[in-house]
Length: 406
Image (cartoon, rainbow, N blue to C red; front, side, top):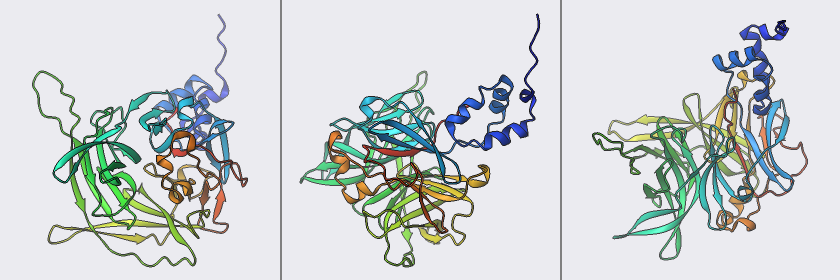
């Protein structure tokens, strides 16, 4: 029987094939590269290219779409499937491998949903709180969340920011922890002593919470699993130790007529960065960004001192994708055709009207025309989804890193 000869591209050297794939940052297009021929797929499984870049999920009236930056300021957009129940959900975070944190329905039922395979995991909807000399159980609203590792990894812990309505009829903000896969809140810590919380990130094997005053609250959380001979015990309890460092006041803004309208934590090159979004007011589109690196110093008395040092080299080749609980850093050098910049979402709605997360699903409307990229050089801000046209109001929006496609 005649055997057709292998196509000429099947024997490409690995370095050439990887060079091709590095120039395809769109996760959807990369998925088809491995289908061209068996030898390509085998090579890509053995020597995977740089991880796919995050996408921006838009839930438009015409259906959900996912957009990826592909070259310069050009973006490609693909339709995606999102269950009908999740199209009016509140999105409050994401994690690698396409995991989305959602609050669904009028009762804000929290769920972790995977966009790739539609896998779902319940999240806590209630918590137990210490109020004076008694414990109270109350319904919670998660505002932002992240994970210590993939939810499929044993021992993974979730950390987040929540609010709970407790007597005397006021809303209290807390730090919270729970075991992934559990709908039971393990630990809640009231943050009235440090101020309102801004963002959360997992860095250096600890959850780092950022306050509006740029204070860092470091919480080391791990599952408490007592030894039990002859059987496996699933324990929802999470051990938490807290480290609160003094913070050195930063220099004044230095940007005329601009104010800080959002701050994000990003792990980059083994350091923790704080990215500030600047605008004339809360409803204005972003005008500029500042990037700071956290400096940690342990003093002679054992106390930890933190300070923020602005990066003099600005982005220094970084591509920073920022969003509450889901910011990520990438090296532009690994993605030919792309440049350093801060890629951001439109979070003006929740900052202008903090009641939005508490509204019923049908009442929530978000601004979304200020999804863009800041390059630090004129023109500093460029809208990156649907060009420069204003985008219709959407019910939700989110950036997240996609699952590796090979």
